[in-house]
Image (cartoon, rainbow, N blue to C red; front, side, top):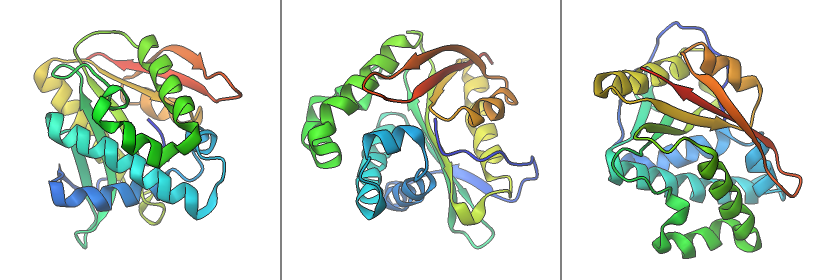
Length: 212
């Protein structure tokens, strides 16, 4: 969805499914990977440490949901065994409900967004409404640590996720608020299906689909 830097195809990482104990580190890596993301800056305009802290709570919420709903969190490990990048895939063929619509998360959403909770939930609902309603894997988040970029981790994470889609004969969807990422995803076979302009001076979001 966000946070990707274009990388070469050289593979230097091992990719595996995340375990429950990996989720806190996954959320930390993603929070720092998205510090300059248009959507995250619109949702957390205060910036700085407060933004990273709130982003980390947001990514942890999404990653735990994806992990429990369909074991959809992949991690790329560097040569030292540390988490260098993460991909969070929602199993929309099993539970076609985005995490922001789950009643049990309302308190958590307030902790993350505060008085901007309505902004976050309304924009998420608008994006999901604009997506094709079909069974699929949804790439909710893909991010690589700044110190690990350019080493093929994003490539390895993409290949692992798309191999899962191919093996299950399911399409994949994603959205990105960073235009520069569109070309990256197109290299893997994703096609732009539309755009969504978020109200209240929000960013433009590109919707993309992959057919296995």
